[in-house]
Image (tube, rainbow, N blue to C red):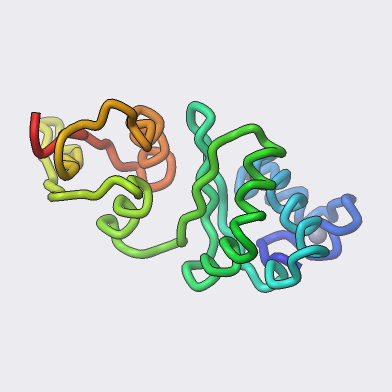
Length: 171
Ligand SMILES: [Zn+2]
């Protein structure tokens, strides 16, 4: 059974105990998480390797979904011709990216912007004491963007509370 903060039994039965219910009320697990956890536990029947996956959380912005699992489980999530990714994408009607939980900001942003690559990252200090992260992507802005930049900004805010400024190496 996919590992989450919820009890395996509660996910399977669909009837949550008080402890699991509290985690939902506190927002530790969202409805979106619950949908994905249930879907993953269904997909386990066809792809038993998913049983070992540790699920962290999912966030969504403008139809782009990021699912965070343990970094060591990325291979499991992508096994079998990325069937799992397609199943999540088809069921929820969103573009799906699977990312490893944890890691430093650079690694997080590289994964988030992939397949685009980052040239440099700079921290900008704002007079009010907050910071923004300037991301310079390599090359010129492509006509057809492989990544939705506005959605990426929102996802970085939700996942790491980072405010991004995105630029390209060449203008
Ligand atoms: Zn429970």
